[in-house]
Image (cartoon, rainbow, N blue to C red; front, side):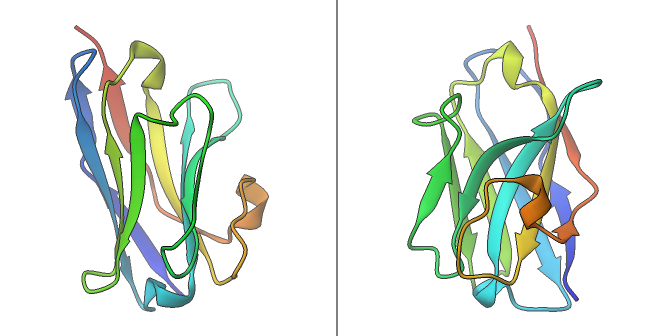
Length: 124
């Protein structure tokens, strides 16, 4: 079983950047697809970005494509989300997820393993 812990959230100004990291323990992420989702109060968890087990394929939500980049670091056993050109509407709790699967689910139900979340607030 893999345990996921996110870090890197905080307060950032509009137009700024932040890098989220998701550290995995218990298992290597080399055989896992991984993703980032986000959630605001009263709304369902929303897909942000996903990467396949090998790191060769990525998917992005339309709202973040071109601004966010997901990556895997096999040596560090982490999944990272580089977030640039941040907007107030990007404010949310961001969750890392993983699943031992060779496809790339974009639904939350496709993932069994979740971190506890990290808050990102975009505000001046």
